[in-house]
Image (tube, rainbow, N blue to C red):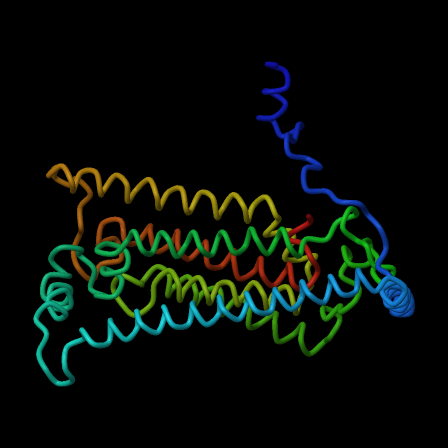
Length: 314
């Protein structure tokens, strides 16, 4: 048992390997599908009782489906009308709705240390929501990997070749001289600008989401213009997963620490620094970096999976 545990921790043993594997068989051609449908129709004509039973079930399903759809629409409409009926009248002051916005504007700089009110709001006051948004991106990347990842086990079409897809020879744009030259000059500019937006998100417009989007766009253009051979040397599948995991783990642990000391009335020892300085606003700067890494890795992962069915060299 201990040997199996050690091999599992080292990565040599996969306990879930083959758990989701299904029978591997090639896709049927269009002619085979037509012949199969014709055989099915002939079998129904020779057995009228089965045909009547199938038609009855289809009719019952349509009736149930329509009733459920109508019921859902009515319930949803009632809820929305109830919410709209309790909204304040147009042009009428609503102190409860303005209270939070006034707090952000008047006390944001003092309480968060961030000159950018938006950064202080999403990474301090509402940091838990931002953590959920980051986990949504990470979960979306995992689901996309499960659905689109190509390997020897799920290559079922006679029109696809695993090794051809792996080498990215279907649409090799890296040999285009114009595209390669433009990418050679554009990618460094995008990377520098993305890092600038990422690191200055707490003192100027920008932050983790916008800076990460620029970095992700730079990685996509690099892969398109220079080829996956260049990008794979920088971002492999393990590195992307490790970056995303470490970024989300740091975000979760740091905010749990802040929530704990705040709920218990303990003084926060992390200094806010001088407003307007690069090293200020407490944890907002490293949290911006964490969010930016998750966004950049997610964007590049989506592109790589849709383009070739894999990330990095996997």
